[in-house]
Amino acid sequence: MDGTTSTAAPIPQAPPPGDFRTRSDVVAAAVRAAGIPQAPTGLVLESSRTPGLGFDTSEQKQAWTAGRVTLAPGWSRDWTGAAQIRFADGTSQPVDVLDAQAALDAALAPSPDACSGFDLTACTLTFTNGSVTTVKVTTNRGQATVPAWSFQAAGLSHPVVVVAVPSGILQDAPAPTPPSGLPDPGPGLAGVETWPGTPASTSGSSLTVAIGHGACDRELHVHVVEYADLVVAGATFVPSPPGSACTSQLILTPAMLTLSRPLGDRPVISVTTGVAIPVRR
Image 1 (cartoon, rainbow, N blue to C red):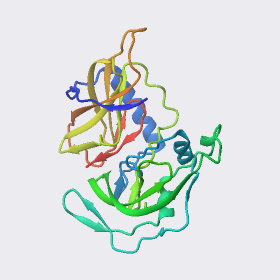
Image 2: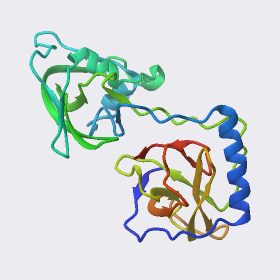
Image 3: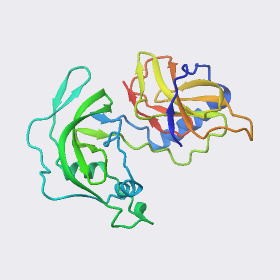
Image 4: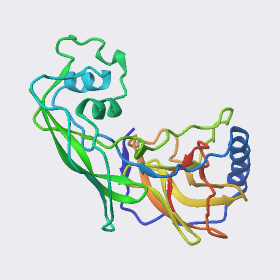
C-alpha cells in the first residue's frame, strides 16, 4: 500500500470517545510492559540512506534487494579530505566520509531470495565508477546536506546515491517495534504514521502528527489520551460501507493536537500499533 501525503485541511481534534480511551489504556499497558521506548540521542536520519533510489530494470532492482552489488576495479573507493554535515539553520559539523564499500554495506539490507526466478548472471549490479558528492536528507534536526557516494553502473540511466556518513554519527532511525500481545485495534481507528517528509513535531503544548487512513474513510477526528509517562494519539472515522468501491492506498493527513501540558520527554504512541513515533522536539 502506497503512502500519499494529503493536501486536505488538517483533521480536527475532538475529545476521545470511550472506545478510543479504552484502546489507549490497553496500548499504554502493553507499552509499559514491554518497556517505555526512549528517544535516541544524537543526530538521527529520518529518511533513506539511498535518496531517490530507482532502477531501470527488474533485475537491477532485485539485485539491489538481494545485496548482489559489487564494485568494479579500476577506480578509487576512498575519500581523503574534509567533509561536513550542513544544517538548514546555517550550522555545520565536521564528519568522516565512509569509503565506497562501507557506504554500500551501511545502505544494503540483503534479502537473498530476492533473485529467485531470475538469471543470477543478470541479477547482479556492478558499479563501474563512483565519486563523492552531497545529498539532502531529513534528520531529527531538519533538512541537512551530507556527504554521499554517487555510483554509476552499465545499463543504469542515473546514479545510485548513497549516504556516506558513519552510522555512529548519523544514526538510522530505530525500527518501530510493536509491543507483543497487543490485540487488533478493530474497525474505525486510525493510527499515527511516520513517513519520509512527514515527521511528528511538538512546540509548547502543540503536537503535530500525520494520521494514516483510507481514501474513503469519513468523519475523521483526531484524539489524544495523555498519561504521566506517555501519550497515545490517533483518530476515529466512519468506514466506507461494505462492498463500496474504493482505492487501496494509505493517505497521510496532518493533524494538530493540543496537549494539557508540553510533551516533554514523553513518547508519542500510535493507538493502532502501539509503536512509538519519532518526534522533533
